[in-house]
Image 1 (cartoon, rainbow, N blue to C red):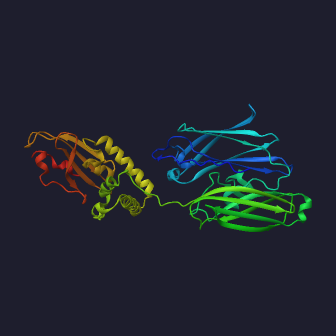
Image 2: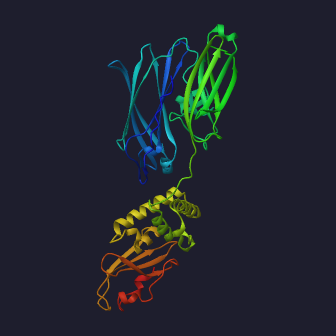
Image 3: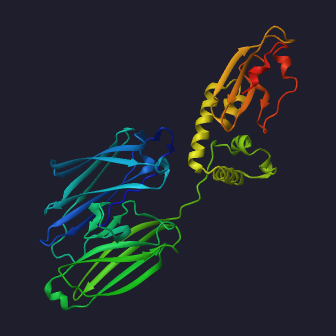
Length: 444
């Protein structure tokens, strides 16, 4: 039986104390059938859930997602078996929640003669997004020569408890239900299958033919001699993918022993992980303006001559370089910038977005001040009374900023700064506050 394939789009991810994914729960499911020594059919149903499609909640120093999975087995109109699983998925680094990592699990059943209808339902507890899929499976014929084919991303010795359900003896066979293999992460695909023979066939020499093609062009063509040694022989073949172009590949495996032969088909997909693009705003011009808060005059002077894609790549690389210079991961740095932009838009907006205001700029660059002093100027000034704020940062930054609401519209302007070379003071700032303004308030 060919693997059951479900390849779904990945959801948009939003990160904070709540690491969020929205919409339908996306899962990949595959099933493979094998025979045991009693000629009974065992079916493995493997399911894979991308981390970036789950909701992770911060809890006790980590991040956790919960998924309820129910597998029902029906015969005709009657449900003859039901199994419920609560998958608790924990990560210590929230960056994993937006990575290409996945959660993998397996349930297994013995099949009798009649076909069964399998139904898989899953719910992400934190987002209530749901997944549902069904398929029909029947036992392998008792005279079958080959089992189903199992596509694995990892086959290696492993005696630990990691993915215990996916071990045969001390060998881990990590399946890839998505059938998607990243050529930058894996050098080859492992194809596992079992060969079933009787004692009379032990004296026979066998031949395995494996072909893989893309767009009707053969890219792999292997002929492998094989001599059965036991009733059930487990074999693993490797398909190199590091030199394959991204795309869909169709494969076939044919086994010939004596007078018997059997063929199985398989499909897989090769991808190549693209360099991630880092940005805060969909519009790269806004990102460029935001970058000025951090990089100032070191930014390019040719920005207006760039096309959209060049602007996007320039912004991405600039954020990445700035994060590295400050010994931060780009993802965690952008999380902080996002949070500060959102805060500025909420509290410092007026006719324009809050992140474009003077207070927004200082908040985005420095975070929340250690102290805010708010007051109104006296009558001892040539202007009407105006509200003002003094922001003080202590510690390493040790800076002071004075903002005045010039038009009494909520759009506070920076008129005085101490200990920040990227900002300038208005030499006449006192004319807005009056001659009786207590300048000692500006001491840190």
